[in-house]
Length: 344
Image (cartoon, rainbow, N blue to C red; front, side, top):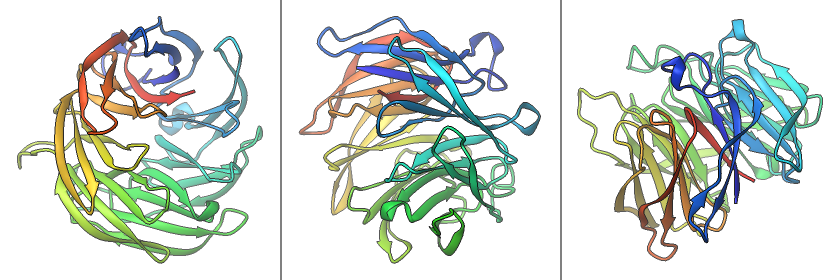
């Protein structure tokens, strides 16, 4: 198995602990060991990665403020593991933090956290901007919800509908898009005040979504309702004291859609829930490091790979496909400030 790892390079923590761009590393599940990470390309704050369905072009955000030219960069994946630049798009919005392909592989969307908008653009070498979906709104948390903060985007309906999580305004917004990417219809679901929805995943049938709320550390289950969603259930993923700053981070659905996993940066843990009509918490596991901003489940469902930002480590944990449990850390390797993972 081969992985790309995006790292923070600027503005997030002690400069001596930061990375230099996007790294590549192999993992041998038979030997249960990582190879030596190598730098695939230098890039500033590569905090979200995705790849086209042909497996040839990698896209990364540059999560920076306007004075450092935020946007998206495209790279050709070379046979020797390097990434060769082939395109670049600069944004007016600041701190892009998430990317998603539409199912047709024609368009990409990027969520800009700081300024709250979403950019839709052609997924070709030109990276031509098609539309900018601007947001407004606030929440009760004066520090974290002073304005809109788009944090995650996902497409459904063959790319005709784009959903986004707005951490700043406590809502999940759904846009029906025209062929040119412009918005033609909008639906919005308000989540509990102060929840701060961060990331979400959608099942293959596109009938259900699972949302992790960063600020309250709640896990919400949504059911499809026309263009948008309705709230079915919300349960605490972690025990979050009233005076604690919520820090829930990543969320993943198992390949068979029977289990949902959520990471907590404050706790340095991953929790697992079974998905069978209602959510049932079945496990709580160490990530083997500090501040798991990102983790993924491998495509075969056999492993969880955790990116621990503050300890600068990747950790591999064997996953029980039948019961959903994660075993103890089986392998680790050092990568400075890892915050994004992509299996190749």
